[in-house]
Image (cartoon, rainbow, N blue to C red; front, side):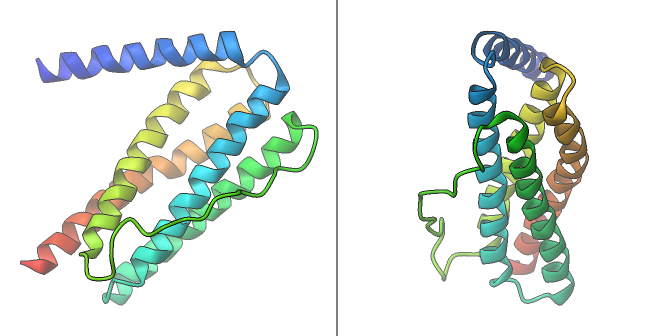
Length: 168
């Protein structure tokens, strides 16, 4: 029953994204606005990973998270490059300040669990979006980014689990 409900929600999400693309993505300006949001999300993931790495003592885990953060930064840069195909000006810089989700005394696994949820959500949405849009620069970029994001989901789940076990 649980997998049937999940499949139903996934089908609804796919239909929702197809409808949004059809109704609201008719102009390059609107596509550019969405790409700016994707770029900001990837940059935000990089920022949270950088903050989380500071709380990890294991050098191997820090190296893995550093590589992951570099990929998130590369995704943000790729979305910035794709934005140029749809926007009529360079991608604007973010106008917000980030805040740590957790205090210095909170366990590092909480940060990686948060990033994990974001990676899983982004992967699912990017897959559905890629399948709903026509061929073009955004679809090609999403295809490349999805390959990395799927690995990030496994990576952040593993990192959270390792950090929780280390507390025991």
